[in-house]
Image (tube, rainbow, N blue to C red):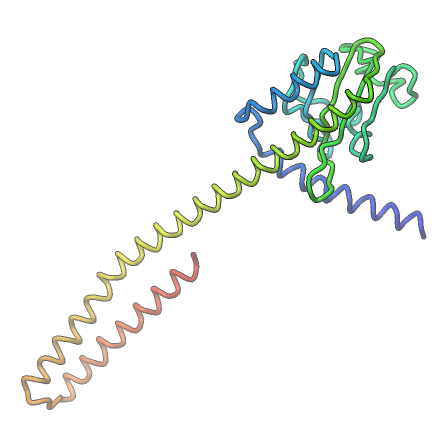
Length: 246
């Protein structure tokens, strides 16, 4: 029973993680040059030719920002980042050929022949790990303690910028929705004001006729007054119904 419990927990955690990944995949990382600057800085300071910002979804490891690497995506099953998102700390593999997890990995055995990997998980405020800021090298390599701290710090900067960009995007969408709603309300008000004016004019005309007759209202005038009031009531209800649907 305990095994089934942990499997269910893992499934729920991954489902939550994938929902968050899909939200951040909507971002246009090319808008902010800071992402490219961070990957370039990570590669330079850690002395590797490749640095990537990746987001790992159900089947694909999306390479959203890259320095020294041409691909835009890789299968999840061959990615190194699938292991990075399982832990809070850095994942460092000095020589991939000595790690049994990558014995048959095409990224190791074929181009680009990755021999060194270091990845810092991209962990947002909720604690969900979306992907990684990672480094590749075609030869066995190591990074110092200071370089490891730099990589972790840059990864936190990436997640900060990602959340900032997403919040700005959501805010702009909300502003647009409010403006669109206000425009619809304005149009409804403009249209309905004309529709309301007609029964109001009829009511005022009938009232004036009653005044002229010494405030004596015959049956015909009362029926006309009732009909105009009914029209006014119907149109007011229509306005309320239309605005409640916005």
